[in-house]
Amino acid sequence: MFCHVDLPFNLSNYSEIKPEDALNEEINAFASRTNSKIISKKNIWLEGHPGMEFEMKPPGNVTPSVDKNIGRIYLMGNKLYLLSLTAKEGSELMNGKDQFLNPIIPYN
Image (cartoon, rainbow, N blue to C red; front, top):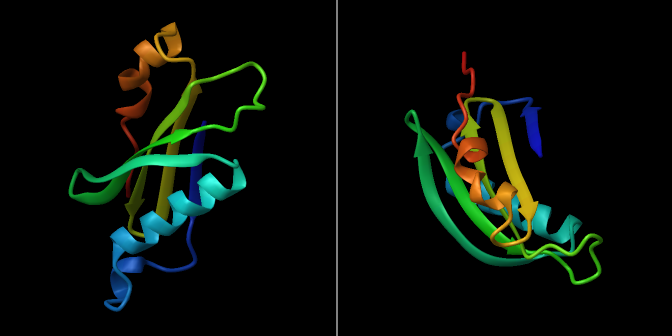
């Protein structure tokens, strides 16, 4: 899944809001919406822009059965990008995850 959101503001203009906190809240909301359990999160950067990499365990009632969800979320000015992949461990899709999660995102 790829998602792009144009925010109505540039987070870097608000010193009281840390980008890491905003990204963390987005991942928590994503986990809540999908009834998934967060396994791990870590801060990452893409071309000087903050991001987070995450892994989640989807609920057991997903059909077809999948083992995990991995993804990355980036904040670039007033744009939020979310890339997420859900698949069985060892599947062709999961084995090729880096091709999907290491995108060239146009930023301007």
